[in-house]
Image (tube, rainbow, N blue to C red; front, side, top):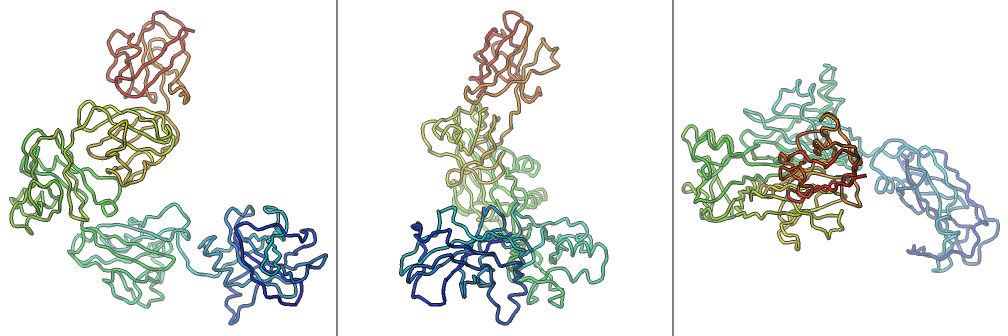
Length: 608
């Protein structure tokens, strides 16, 4: 549906030298609202037809009637609000004009308001319109009627906007690393797009491998073109998109359909210039951008904590986020310290070359080997090995490389026993401990989350906090400051796994914690309910004195039992093979289970 707006009404043919200056808050006019009526006169609005005329005519949308004359030197002005929904949740406002009490609006102004404030979608729809009236006396402007209830002539009419762009819901690479007909039929290389309407977000992107040999030639097709090719329809190949101007190696420019270009005009990325190719389309403007991406899918450490051979290197793969390497070029490897170490790194080609006794494809530092940050390059561009070096004084080292910028950072890590989560669920004032006894930066905890959050190494300050880079609402990669909060996973109780060494985290929703034991033959579950106010899981159950445990999500992968082996250590439950929990006698009990981190888990058991 649509938005049309702002009308100007005059009650007589005499012109007054007035200026309509809209204000943030306007006084209510003394001219009574019941003395004005506006009859809707628009029955249909087709901007394609209207704007095709050599001199487009104004669109009549209403007829004004006054039951009493306006005060001297006063005219009526109006605005028309237009929307695609009857509630006017999103609308635009345009000025109108009044001649002989007929309200008209300019068609070009309507079109610009619709596409600028409502939608970019050219599909026909219904347009809801309502009018606001003002009195203008000299420079004084007042609104007629009670604000918020002063709308006149609410109506909706069939509306066809002018055609500005036709955007398909999906686009695909045809050709590229695959054969042309087969890739069109399979639609294997699809452009990604947000979940927004394509007219609100006309940007489509794709990253794909360059051809294994020779130049990479490709075109772009929508579903109609790909289906026509797959069905061997006449003229199907002319439905693909090509480059306007015919420069196949252009990295940016305009696209159009082959049937408009009169030639194939396919895209070409020369051999040897890219490992991967990124293509970005703006289908509202019909523009493209082609970028060469020379980043491998994987990188490996060689030397250091391992051996200087290919076999050892293949066991030391850098971690990477779930994003594409073009969108996230940062790779991370964490290794234990404790001794003096030299190391390098390389992609799979470089490591395979090492297996053939060729070492100059590895990457080395362009600075001193002891530098903890700097740039790097292939050894064949350097004047020696230029390996990296650490003295081993830290417990662990994080080696992070940015393959887009060709820079690296080595961070000595000496992790404390605890890291902390803090977020909206506690008003950003309560730090929740995560436990990591091994000192390797891996922490675990269980907490109720409700909104965005962050991680930080200290309970009482924000120094060196970790912030979000990419991922989804159940996990992602992190960086040291400079990023947004971790996204809201949805209100609920979660298992939180933080790897502060590799800079990532993951969440597992705890759907339920249940009681299971001898009382139900170790074959059933008494589900507990999480009490947000009390911060614990609760249930009332009848159990016997022969033992039970608590388990997560009806699975034995994670369960909690007595920590000391006597089954009665209610204040120190453990999920690491804890003993069965024992009550003194058979009966009905209330259980309040507090789960947070190892060493702090407990259950309060009350006889009913």
